[in-house]
Length: 198
Image (cartoon, rainbow, N blue to C red; front, side, top):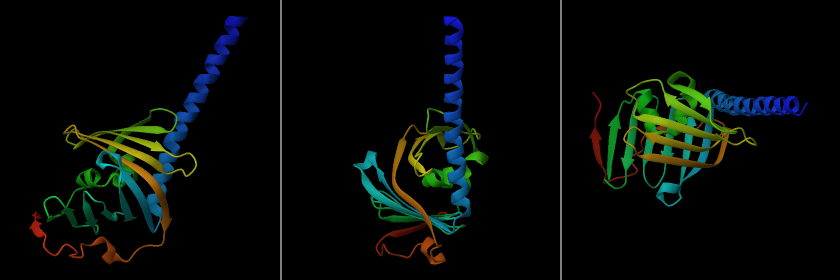
């Protein structure tokens, strides 16, 4: 009888773990859907590997602007401008979706089902591994906030071995920003413009 009771407990625990795992994936699916359907999403984040410095994101469908102390990037749906303060230069490119995911972790969230294999890894975490062997990203762990149903931490392991952690402190959907928001506005007057477009 004790053995039978133990088996029931193990079975119930397994069901509970599976339900929690499914919940993490469902939350990520929901977040991706909200990013796709909202006029825009605005987020604030910190970068612990850079002393906890703060940054912000404004994303509207495929367009976005990221402002942080270590990098600034604008993408209007076709052209990306990337400013690196250490080099004082602005690189102009026409990136692929794969390249965009390396510069903006939120693009990973929006496209995870298309470009990644995914599985739950813990109660509120989803592990993503790229389907493409040539991806510049090796693995992504997305920790979901059960209260907001938005990501709270995005851990990215690049193929180079470098790691990026983004702690999201606030995120919400709102009305769309003007299109010009997602284009570089020449704010860095002395920066060298390097056009890398084909």
